[in-house]
Length: 185
Image (cartoon, rainbow, N blue to C red; front, side, top):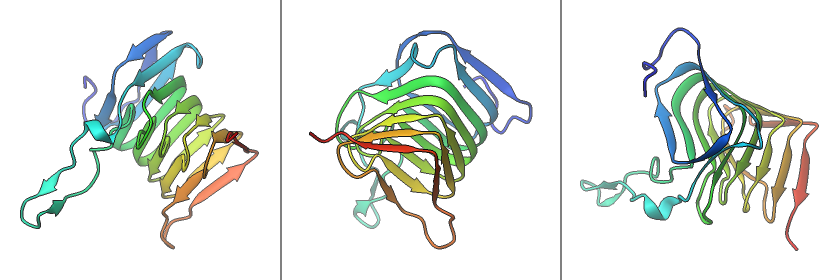
């Protein structure tokens, strides 16, 4: 909150090792690097899913007005550009529609990050680059809209790995040297 919206200079936020039990949500930010001290020892988590977040209701049409932000993730980046998330773990503690990481933005880089969630453990909307990430999801664990590139990533899921919702105008998902492991017993 202390970083001004659409700030032109690069700001680095360093997170020391620890367990952080809280929801992270920020919007309209740019040029931010969020870097953890140790991927396994910096854990941002919260018990959240869409049941706790009421759907907005459009009284004129008498129907749901949409779902975002009603499906808030443990960690959400909204309407941001040039944000880097490095060297930490983000997760939700509940099952259901429960994202660990939700991204709405462009030029987002996620490196050395563990993501744990249930339905749509990772939801990414816009252009994003993921390297050396591990996702432990509960089925259809990657929901994406936009050009997304994955390199050297590991994915674990008991069900479908992804639900891609790209139109013909979007490039879609690319996977290079990634491993998909089914966890259903």
